[in-house]
Length: 278
Image (cartoon, rainbow, N blue to C red; front, side):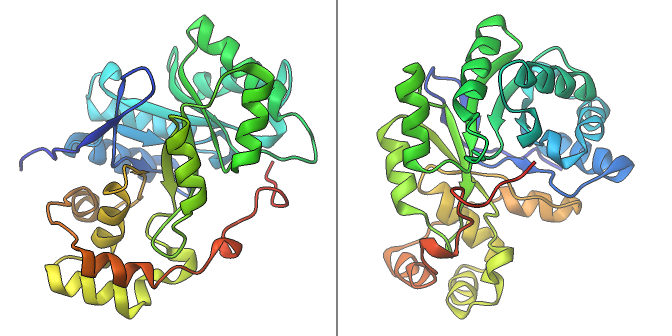
C-alpha cells in the first residue's frame, strides 16, 4: 500500500507542518500506541497529544513502534492548566518529555488560557525560554481568542507560532482565523469533524459528500485545509486514518455556500474566557 502524501503549510520560520495530523485525545494504552504507529506507517507525520490526555507514554511508544525516524515526526504536546506559571511550566514540559521518551518536543502549546489564574503570560514567557534552550522547537497556544493572544504579544513581543482552536464547518471561527492569519499564526483545528455539534447529520454536508463520492468527514477536512488550517482528526481504524488524509477532490463555490449554511455562530464554541481546564 502506498504511503500517504500529505500537503504542508509553514510555521513562521519556514518549518513545514502537515495540514493533516493525527489527534490522540481519548486514546489510551496499548491500543493508542498501535493506532499511532499505524498512522505514522501510513504517512502521517504530525502527532498531537497533551499532558491532560494522560497518554503521552503511549504516544511515545507509538512513535518508537512505527520505526519512523524521530526527526521526521512533528510531536506536539500541551501544558496543562495545573502546570501554568513560572517554574511549573518548566516542570510540566520536562514531565511531558520524560513520559514521551524524547529529548525535545517539536511543538508545545498552552492548553487553555485559564484567565482566572492570570498565569498565561508567565507560562508563555517560560515556553519562550525553553525554546531558547532547545527543549522545545516551536511554541504556541490552544483555545486563545484574539485579545488573549494580544496580551501575550504585548508582554513579550512574541506571537505564538500556532493557535489550536475548535473549528469545523459548524464553527468556522472566521474572526479568530483572520486574526491568526494577520499575525503569522498557523491555525490548527481541533474537533474538525464537528462531532460535538452533530455536523455529520447535516443534510448540506451529506449533499456535498454525495456529489464528490466521498465521506462527510473528508468534506469537513477538505474545507479546513483549503483555508490553510491544520486539522488533527483521530481514528484507531487504519482505513479511516487513510481516508482522513486522502483529500484529493476540490470543493467549488456551490459547495462552499452550502457548507457556510452550517455555521452555528461563535456563541456555540467553547468560550475560553469562561471555560477552564486543569
